[in-house]
Length: 258
Image (cartoon, rainbow, N blue to C red; front, side):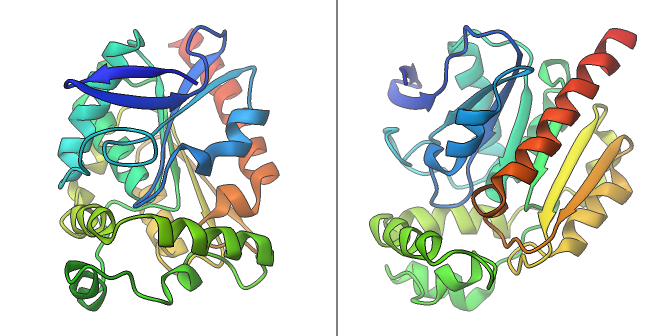
């Protein structure tokens, strides 16, 4: 569970980048942290080497939340250079998925593949939510949009605790970055295989967002996971891990053939 310095700020990431396996760097969503990838870090080793980073101003990382997806994208590149990883698979959830998408477009030589979870090429946010966050408050029903009605109560309780512990300013920066993000017309530029995952009950980034990605990324595969909401990697970790494991194994074969 090491720290590294990026832009003179201490950055925390979970995992061991010296292990064998294809490096997958997981980027969390708005207001999140590396802990959202607990089940992937624990159960995905071989053929995957999973790493999960706390973005600036999140979790245990120093600094302030950034204000655009492009800024996070370039920060991610600098982070990977600091830890000595030249090529990897960007994997992201929600805001993290936007970062991964943008990374694949702007740093194709450093991208082995792409894993997109509960995300889209365009991530508009309700103005009313941004207005409340701008005033320094988090909407009280925010957590209700994160999980499927079928999610365990424990997940909801933990989710409320996490939301309460995160400053409204961080959510505002992240969600404002999402609101200004739109690379829909650039998706055909993605030159690596992509795995797209989404829960059937995702209300923040509905299934249609994932289908649009699948229809416009040249080499992509989509899996819709029944009974999961926006936090699909926490709600249905076994299905998510199975899909990632199969994709990475197939990607290794693809890379050898190309």
